[in-house]
Image (cartoon, rainbow, N blue to C red; front, side, top):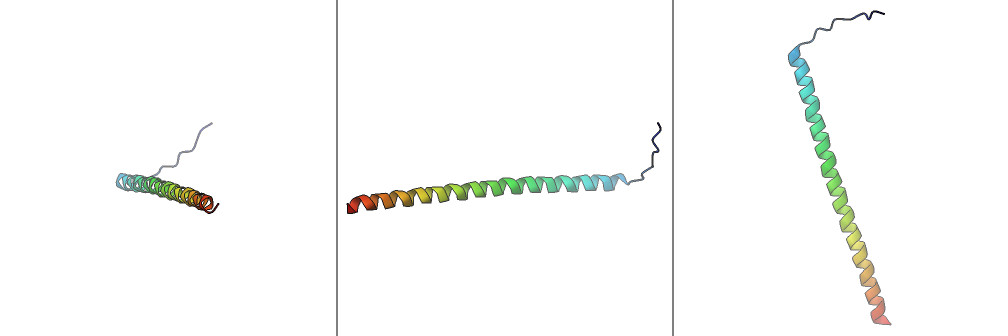
Length: 66
């Protein structure tokens, strides 16, 4: 079984430019995802600490009244 090959004429400089452009985007996307993950985890941690502190303050205030 023979495969018919279609010749492709490409300029090597264009090929390199495309792959460099893709790697730049990949680096940008990975960096953005890492930074977004750090921001989300920091905000989640701060919100959890605020919730725990508020709940503890309310429990302490209830004990003072009794």
